[in-house]
Image (cartoon, rainbow, N blue to C red; front, side, top):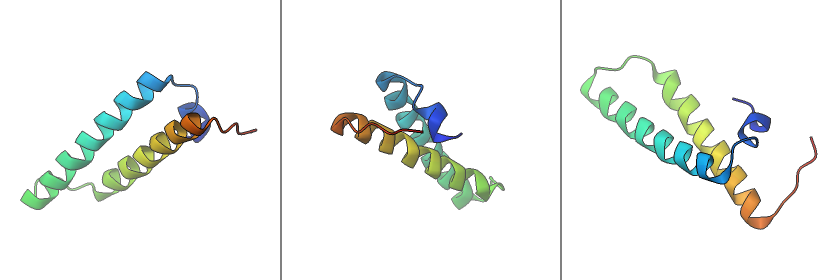
Length: 68
């Protein structure tokens, strides 16, 4: 998902997504260790989405305005 769409979410929605993505990454890593999961690309996408969400939350804490 593009960062512009992430910015449309409220702070609470972003915090919930951060929590959900963290759990998803944990579960995917666990599945890989057991040899159950096969889609390694999903971990990469989840990690990037997590980083985007955390970055936007941090920008809002620092009250940084981006012009797009």
